[in-house]
Image (cartoon, rainbow, N blue to C red; front, top):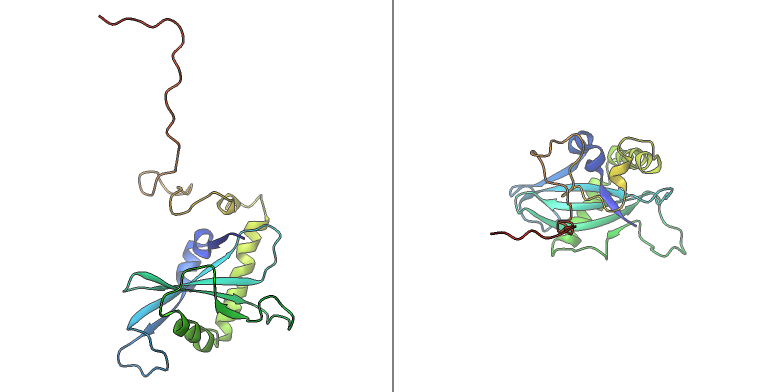
Length: 183
């Protein structure tokens, strides 16, 4: 299953609605986290007709300028006999920092305690999956496998303003006919 950042398809909405938590030096806290601003960036599945009903959250520390945790969250509680018994957990396939356990606790106890935020995640999921499942949607091509938003140019972006599209460098075609001798 391939995951893609919500902001690739919904840049403005994603920027406006990305949840952040500011940990201040003076704030009392049950979380042993350094002073920073932590952004909870949403990623969703790009597999067509998949109704996984989950979101992956990359936690980014703004001032430390690094990825500090990856959290996996399902919208519904799993069944008792489910393969993964937790609804919200640190994703074992992605890198985690030493701050990850405290960020998971912060996310579960503080961020997810907001019903509006939980509804926002579900709304973003449906917006994202609508693009993924509709080949006629103008942004559907962005969800195809092999498209790398960090490298590939989006159509509304002038080539000089953003990163260049990857194109293989091919050798020139073979010469045909007689070779000319240079004097």
